[in-house]
Length: 317
Image (cartoon, rainbow, N blue to C red; front, side):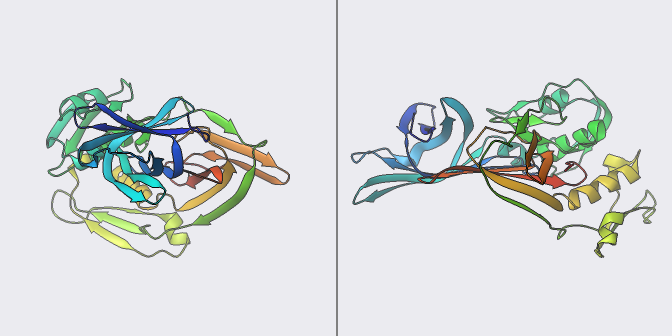
């Protein structure tokens, strides 16, 4: 194990172990509530006589304290020779990205569960799914809808929730089993808060079966903040039975992450999205969910930045 706790392993296309790296130069690991994959940017010092071939490297694994915390596909990798030796650097994304880049089988699915939805589509290697038994009366998959967008529709219909990624490559559609962390005794280097409503929509109209815009939904919060941005969309068969609910969730997604608050502390606890976080430091009190997690490590140490969103799917108390 390296001095800072991080170890990187790379594998070729047939899954054979190729090389292990412990001399960390820097890394950034990022999880985000509405991004269906985890990203890892890294740079490690390699042995002076390293001769690893980067042409066939496909898989990247990151360990912390002996526990594997990231498994993903190599999207960019480079081996650079310098006067002091070789440096391996690159980017990797978790395998859940394939769920957002592959189309789902179009059509109507009745009595749809997460399991039946997944089974109806191409199997995604290294991706797992939350075990939930609840079913929706139907979901409608449009042409060119991704598997991720179909899962999102199911998650909203069942739990009024947007799906998210936990662990290495697990898709969750229901908030359950979140861990809780308290940082009152940790070294917190900064706290921050703000808002970003650049994607918010004030009102949205949807066509009915006769071609007229029979349905609409207004975002009172966006309007209160002076946002005027109206949208007209065609009939969405996903929400024929409950058009206002469908429009509401389109508005919530447009306003995702609009209000946020966060902090940075020294260290890393392997927090997951939607975990509960809190601290009390003097007059400053913080309670929220993990909506974005950014871990940065270099020669200065390990620093984790946690951001909590306040929107239709996340909360700050």
